[in-house]
Each structure stands twice: as C-alpha cells, then as structure tokens.
Amino acid sequence: MNPTEWRELYFQKVAESSEEGAEAVRFVREKKVRVGMRRARKHVGAFWMLGKSFYLNTIHYTMESALINPRAWTLFVHEVRHLQQGTLTAMSVYGELDAWQYEFRLLKRLTGKTLKPELEELLTLPLSFDRVTLKKAQQLMTKFAGFWYGAWSLPLYPIHKEIMFWVTRKQYD
Image (cartoon, rainbow, N blue to C red; front, side, top):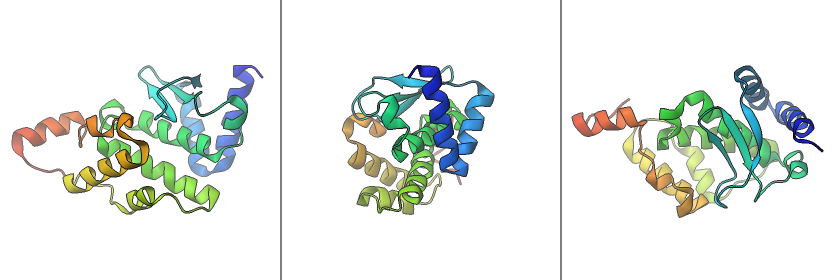
C-alpha cells in the first residue's frame, strides 16, 4: 500500500473511532498537516514537528498495524491536540497533561480496559496550573514512559507563563 492510500485509510479509521478522532481528522485536513510514519526514539509512540507534521513511530507501528490498533488512533488525537494547543503550550507539562488525558480517556473508552495504575492516576488529576499537580503529572508520565520520554525536561507552564512565574512567584488559575 502506498503512503497516500494508507493515510486515507488511517484517517477513516481515526474518524470512525470517535468524535474526538473525527474532529482531529477535520483539523488535520483543514490545516493541511502532513501525516506519515518515521522512526523515532523507542520511548515515543508518535510525534509532531514544527511546520505542521505528525508521524507515527515505525519502531512501534507499521502501516497495517496502525489501521487496527486503537492506540495508533488515540496517539493521532494526542498529537493533533498539541498542534491545536500551539507550540508554547504543547511544550509544557500542562500541555502534555491535557493531551495525555485526552488520549487515554479515549483509549479507555475505545478498549473498555483499565489502564496501568500511573495512567489511571493521571486521569484523576485536574487540568490546572497548580504546580503541585503538574509536578505529579510529570512524575506519572516519567513512570509510564520512562526517563528518555523527557517529561522531566519540560517547563510546568507554557514557557512565557513559566518565566512570569519565576519573576513574580504567582501561580496561574
């Protein structure tokens, strides 16, 4: 199967999986986001890049497996969520918490399965700018995805808000 045929089938599977999937596919089509497959670090299931692109990691997925694996569909929703957030938010623990919760709530609904304990706990956290909550989210992400996932390296807030926090020491609401 060629990449164009695969992409259309993948979009169809993602869109049919849920309203979140259909909305993510609409966004990608509207914004003309490039979608494909590329090799990445083993701790990454999928990734987005500046310049509007999304890739599934070929270490974990083939064209065929991406069409039948709900995790490949929810990763799409996760990465598109980052594209919707914008770079500053996406590159923060706050942005990751939002995308992880969006992805794993959907995965849980699609599969009907209980997730690993750290993911179940992550789903109970409120999406807020509370630094204690964001540090807990960062720890849970690292526990689930490993040190090399890199959650530890992200600022808790989007960088412009993180800088303001360090200057004023005021938390956001």
